Image (cartoon, rainbow, N blue to C red; front, side, top):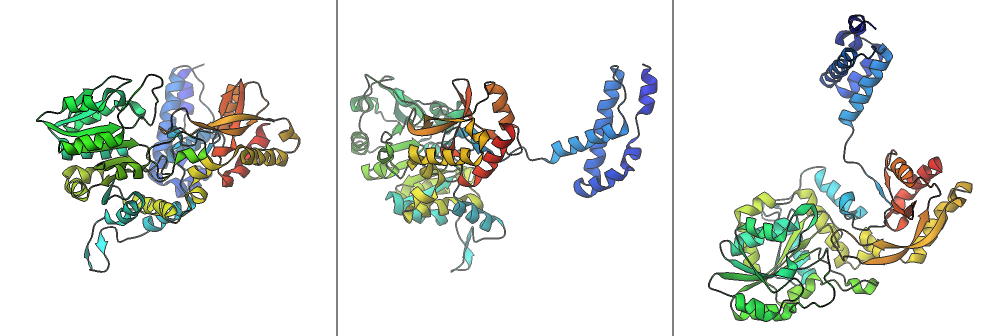
Length: 455
């Protein structure tokens, strides 16, 4: 093959632009993006020819241009169907939002809003006002503040209230959260000096007391929401720590990590400390996430003493961590579900947590029945759904799993992920299994259609 002859066959940019099919693409993608795509395809083809590959025909080149354009404009962030049974799945976006929350965020994002405008007074207002009353009503706290995530909430609290001073914390609570972020690193970045007390498995109130010095600003509890230490363990009660801190004129800070307003023990899970528990115990500042067990948009939430929250609100770092109008609208609407007593029916993660195995099994059987003979090739078996997402480690609830028949589990799982609507299941005993606990009702039709194509 003569390389020079093959290069001569390569059409020019203008020639491809003149093709009838391309005029339609220009209306969709714009001329600049189209020209760029053509040039990149031709450059890549030229390199291939120089390596000994024959020049493709014009139709093949245009197909390459079309694929290139599709890759450029297709959003990389896409909705997926979570059939893993992991309810708060960090990699899949944590908590799905209620329809009311989605509508509230869209309504505010669609136009202008009174984000920082007092409609009654006709002058500048505060973005932090909108969710504060609801948070105080639900938790019993004096004041509240929203920031972008819980790591930011902890950073802001320590930086503002303990910078340059000591914060005492148990060695057993020096946790690492997702992405390699560690509590000691967050504390160091804030400018607070970490003082570790006790051991990994046993810490006592007297350890905190012994560590108090002239530079001590606060005690801190970091709840182990993503791991559990079992066996020969001890941690002082929150009441004891609060009493000791206040007796010595120190602050008591409580980082709940996930944070819940509902007693998880009512659903067969271990008791997770509630936000209200900390406020009632007299904790000065409680921090927690908005997108885990609260079930709303990503946010860090701070509740506690009014004078301390006011200091946080005025801190320069708060502006760097502030949330936007759509997040505030979503948090506010999500909190209203709790105020109105409808969290279990309206917030998706609480619907999932509270659903029984029989209910999941009934949904699974209905889906298989709809698939007819193809559904009959699948099986149902009991399993467990995980809470996940740095919440209630190792905690699970009984469920019913759909077992797909194909033995090449890795291949089938990949084909499920690569559909128009990606479906993410899990592999159990060399079979792909699907847990409908984490599949939203509106997604079942798309799931059934895709299964019908693959089985």
